[in-house]
Length: 267
Image (cartoon, rainbow, N blue to C red; front, side):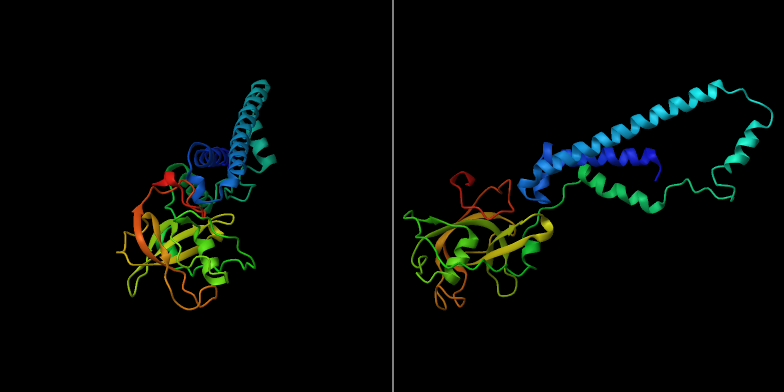
């Protein structure tokens, strides 16, 4: 790859990373919030490497022109130098100094960081994913006395399927997430997509909703209701579902790829 093109790629890549991680929240569509310092450091490093490479080329050209200014041209000198060096093509009659066409494809991901915001993962992805299994738990603490009880989708799933004390029975529960239409048969799921590290390892948590019309896909809502009876509560036969009493639209959180508790400020 020609060095000027390499410089451009390094500089644009650094600027793209800094834009996504330092100037905006777009990085949250790629990785967890904890990795922001790493992205910022990487952007700064790429930018410095590009600038250093550009300065190096500028100095090299200055020295080259300086040396040429001290040479005295003699008849046949240019042809002798060309013969000694074999020319740019090494004497084979082919020019290998050009950049491979495939290398231009490197500009696509770099420019996307600067010019294009990737769509957020949402209902389209969740509808095609099997809900992730929650971690096995042997002990569940008592639920708060507040009504409704704020819960994460993961905690609600775990208590419905594993809590032998059946603490959620008859309790008003509040959860937040985005809407995923159920497809065949109608209905919808309250959903969260969770990053363990980045978008590549995203997992989905869903809770089936009963008793309300289907809101538009990808709408973020706060739902209040009670556990939908079925099977045996506290065992895998119990449905992870809620009979809704209220469904209110809320603002999409900045860091949407977590399974956080409902916040009053989100309304």
